[in-house]
Length: 555
Image (cartoon, rainbow, N blue to C red; front, side):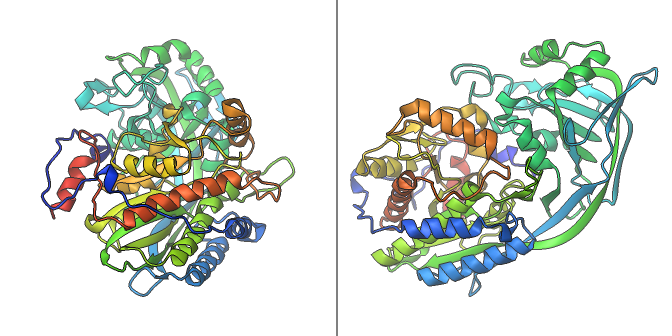
């Protein structure tokens, strides 16, 4: 998966004769119809029931989810979006690691340490093989594991890691910068900082295994999230080579485990991590070996994207896109009370409910000029697989897709004065968002935690990297009641106690006022896009502008 070639390309803006740019004063006025809070509650509650078993792809929960969404889309007045079908098959590989051994680290004398699966390390394979066995694989610390020729940065320079186990840091080298200055965007994470990139680059280098050192701040979540997300069944896109181009094993280790490993190697972890943040860092052989083994249950499955469309009245062959992922983790690491269902109520039954509520709203207002596509995608939690598959195999041509809005995990913290824009300043869709926010008396602001890399963590990215302008925002970090302190406390509480955990369950006591305020913004943006003949583009110099210009020029 070569996301990097698109995510970090240097762009020269092109002028396209066929493209009509956005003029602020030409944006259509939008009246928001009554959007149903009852629909938001009912759909979120239903999809969060234990009977859906956490909505894992390929499960009974998927069957129930897809059937339910089709019924709700139909009732909302949509038409089937895939040539008469409500669904698009997404071919996946389901791999479940079992009988996982401890991670054994040995020095040259044979002295060994052992670390437990789950609590101290997690591991899995992207290869379709019944058993994975890593035996006495030499270990090498490769810093952030980045190869960025355009930045003159190569953490693998001068070291051969073929058949070895590489240990890498999460995020970018300049993660701790206060501002956005630095070789990798300062505090803002680039795709080089994402765990997906670390695995991909290690595979390109021929490593047998890769272990990411978990550190809560740069990872943006605690070990509880790693444990629940990387244990149990994993889903991958089907590949022609059965995953042979991937590493044999990839996973994470606790930072406390990394400290012990480095100490056994005669190295100081903190000093080496500090050195790895500097340009010219040289990989460090640890003179230790790693061993682990596990079996893999493998199944080929076709999960489904659910697609509904409202045909445009004047330009039906031009499309506006709403996306949200319907899937969650299924059964996961059990909570203290034994509950092992990750219901995914906030993440992302709320966003899926918004697709239904918005479809109802569009039906009340009548068909817009352009067609509007409501796309509920699968396997977001497994690496944006459903949206990636649609973007690479679109039902509606991306060259005719005007732009889109992605919805992922509404905040239940109450109404906010502002809204947090993920990727603010990247495209002309900011103008639509600003107009919508002004109409609702709110202020769009840049995300306060760009180091968490949210731009690369939700389904809009699958479309952005292929040129389609997408807007993605969150509820805001300055609440009407309690301000920024209350918003921060609520976000931290959710991340610690419910995110990717059994605690993300529906609560009848939730305050939906902030959700409904956000829903109005989503409606306004999509309706404006559907009622104008403008083609918003990425801003000059943005990494996605070139691919959009080529697409719109028919290249």
